[in-house]
Each structure stands twice: as C-alpha cells, then as structure tokens.
Image (cartoon, rainbow over all chains, first blue to last red; front, side, top):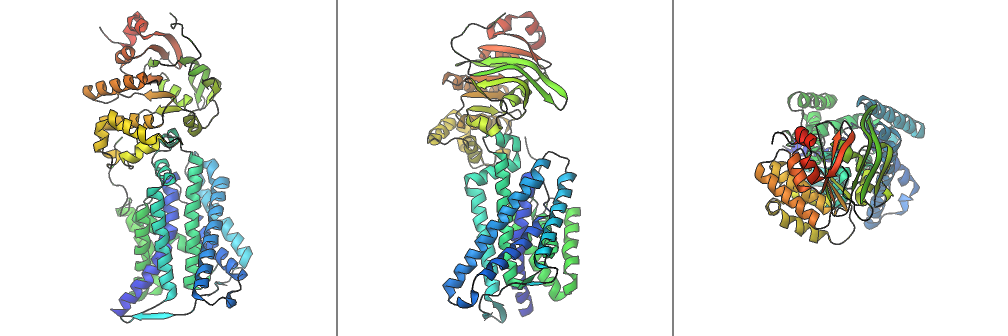
Amino acid sequence: MHQFLQQLINGIALGGVYALIALGYTMVYGIIELINFAHGDVYTLGTYFSLTILALIPLSTITSGPELALVAVAVILLAALLCGIVGVLIERLAYRRLRNAPRLAPLITAIGVSLILENIMQIWKGTSEVPFPQFLPDRWHTVAGVRFDDRSLLVVGISLFFMIALNLFVFRTRLGAAMRATAQDRDAAQLMGINVNSTIAWTFFIGSALAGVAGFVSGLYYGTTFFLNGYQAGLKAFTAAVLGGIGNITGAMLGGFVIGIVEAMTSQYISDQWTSVVVFSILILILVFRPSGLLGEQAPEKV
Amino acid sequence: MSAPARNGAPVLSLRGVDTFYGRIPALRDLSLDVYEGEIVALIGANGAGKTTTLRTVSGLVRAARGEITLHGASLVGVAPDAIVRKGVVHSPEGRRIFPRLTVFENLHLGGYARKDADLAADFEHVLTLFPRLRERLKQKGGTLSGGEQQMLAIGRALMGRPKVLLLDEPSLGLSPIFVDTIFSVIADINKRGVPILLIEQNARKALHLATRAYVIETGSIVKSGSAADLLADDDVRKAYLGKD
C-alpha cells in the first residue's frame, strides 16, 4: 500500500508536467488543427532557459525561504516568456504561411522545426546530460509512511496553479472567448471582428509559455536534462492530449495526470523499461477504440 | 428600369467588382449600392453569386478588381476583422453561430469589436427583440433549434451595432411562423436606421420587404429597380416568383 501511495505521488508530479505540455498540444490543435511536433522541444528549451538563468544568479548567497521563492517565480516567468516568444516566432515563420496548405505540409514543417530546435540545443549545451541547479533545500516529509520532498509539492503546486490560471483565462476573458470562437469557426470569428492572426499567435504564446513552465518544473524535479529530452516527453504529453480528447483543455489536464500515474505504476509493478511501451499502447488503443478521447466531442454538431 | 433617385451618397457601394475562386470567376463587373434607410434585396438562383457578393464586401473573399466603399472609404484589401470594426456586420449563410459557446457568449462576441460602453443596453435590446434567447442564455448555441439559432445569429449581428447589415438567407430552413418573426425583426432593425443588404431565397417575401432590389445571374447584376417594379416585372415573376 505504501508503495502504491508513493507511486501515486510520483505519478501526480510527473502527470503535472505532462499535463502542462499536453495543454500546448491541445490548444494549438484546437485552433489550427496542427499537431505541433516541435512542442516537446519548446519544453526542453524551457529547461535550458531556466538552467541558464539560474546559472546567472548567485544562488549560494540566497538562503532565506522567501528569497528562494522569489527566485523560483522569476525564473519560471522568464522561462515562460522566452518559450512563449519562441512559440510565436515558430508560428509566424513556419506555420502561418501554410495555414491553407494541404495538412501534410505543416505537419512535415513541424517535424522540421523540431529538428532545428534539437540541433540548436545540441550546439548550445552538447549531447551529454545537462545538470539543473538544485537551489532548493533537500527537505523530505513523511506522511503515513509515504516519503516526498519539497520539490514534488512544488511541482504539483505550480502545475495546478497554471492549469487553474489557464482555465480562468480561456473561460473568463475576452481573448479566451476569441480563442474558443476561432477554434470553432474561423470565418465566423473574423465576422465578429476577431483578428484571427493575433488570436492564433496568442494561442502559440500561451501554449509555449506553459511548456516553458513545464520545462522549469521538470528540471527541478529530475535535476537533469538533455537536448533530446522533449522528444519522448512530447510524445507522452501528446498521448495525454489524445487520451483527454485533442482540442479539449480539461481533457489534456486529465490525460496528463492519467499518463503520469500509469507511468509511475508501470515502473513500480511491471518494469521501468516498459513505461513507454505501456503509454504508447494506450495511445494506440485510444486511436482504435475512442479516437475522440475521454472528453472529446462525440455528437456531430448541429448547424 | 432605373432605381428611384435619392439624395446623398450611398452608405455601401460596389463598383465593377470581380471576384475569383481560384481561377473560376464568381463575380463579374458587379455594381450595387445601399443607401441610408434602405433594405436592398439581392435575388438570384443558387450559385449566382449572392453569398460571394456578401463575402467579398466583408473581406472574407478578396475582390480582384473594382471598388467597394463604406461612406466613401475603400474596403478592398482591408482585413475582415477591420471591416467589422468599421461597421459592416455580416450575418453569414448557415447562421454560423458558435455551437460550443453559450448563447450569452455568442451574443457578446457579436460586440467583440466595439469599445463603447453601450454594449449592455444593446444586449438588453436584443433580448427584448428575442425573449426566447433570454431563457436560453446559459445554453450552448448548438443545442438551440434552427429558429432560435437564427435569432441568435441576428442578435449577435446587432450586438456589433452595424452601420450596414448584411444578411445571408435569414429565413432558410425555418418554419413559417419563425419566418414571419424574423422578417418583422428585420423591418424593425431597418426602421431604427440600419440599412440592410438582404439575400433571401424567398424572393417574394424579400421584395415585399425591400426598398430596392438587384437580380444577379452568373455573377453579374442583370436587373435592378424598386422592389415594387421588380415584383411586377414579367421576367422576374417567371424566374423567381413562381406561378402566380
């Protein structure tokens, strides 16, 4: 039982990261029906930005709790901002001109952008593992026999915070309404006076910024990264988005946590080496038996 | 037969407009005007270019040649969202409400382009015009009946406070009772000072409501005049009004 609870906590922390990445996949798919294969690499870029910024801060001189929290917030926001800008640039330079092209063209372009980002990171930090500065004190807690540290709490807390913020943004603001309208009917959205280009750009900004947050969080959690890290994490987050119902924001969050927990349980009860097999088997099963995902639209729309 | 003489410049004017879908011409040398206070009907067969005319005005399709002006200012090459902000509001064919947004959200998106503070008053006005929508504010647009969706589409267009309103087949697929409701609302909107360019498959009803009308065939205007004249015109009666 302890083992189970232990893995549940690990799974939720992991799931928070997947959920944050999955949101970017699902938002972009929702608005331009593109699987943005470069998204996983934007996530790794988020880790790279975070560790680069952290290296500029004299961490050894900062010891008080509030100061450390301030550092964390500043790094998260900067990494999110930089990733958001990268996302907007990718959309502007690579995808926008292909918006009315056959769907294979932007898909192949996305794979190309992914390779470009991976190569940039390879040149930037090399091919070996890159350590992530551990600036938080190593503090462990034991509750009912289950051990977890501050980082797990922080990972879950940060993920939940940004998910709630995103939900409020998408469902309570003007720009959020414009995004949902553009996703449902681009022409009609234009006839409402919505600038579709800037709405799509904002969608890329927000999705990529969330990947930046995920990049920080995973760096903190794992303490290490490398230039191809986003390849598999991206595919797993994509699985999470498909599981929840691609295009569905709540679904992406749900799918992220499910995939995280499945992965943790698989490594506990089957084998560490089988996690990818299990996760991608889930992807195949969903695509075969329920392509619209857990929360996707089932009924055809009435026009 | 010619249009009755009128004072002042047109609100909306198309002059010699050509439009293409790819290489296929859709509109050829099309000219029409909408003056202050008018309801102008555009009648014609399916595929004649009625919808394309409206889509060209609102910028969804770009005019390859010719001039389109609103109060004298050119609309050619202006982005669709900017054209809306200038006051050309287009309620498109098939209603195109947002099915997964609530009625409330749909209506407020209609006022998305506006910056003024009268949105609340216009919202109230729309709900007074269509009391049915008030009961359904929290429902998703896609769950409404066809007639209710049409009310929503028109209400949403009114939220944009149009300087000129383009209506594409507002009565399509509606029951006769709803058709009468929609037509009386259109007349009411016009009485409040909004000029309207109306496409309608029910040519007889459209001509009874309109001030003037244009007949479009294969992308060109072939006839125009006062609605009363066109109602009495033999060719129009044969082609568009059916047996009488």
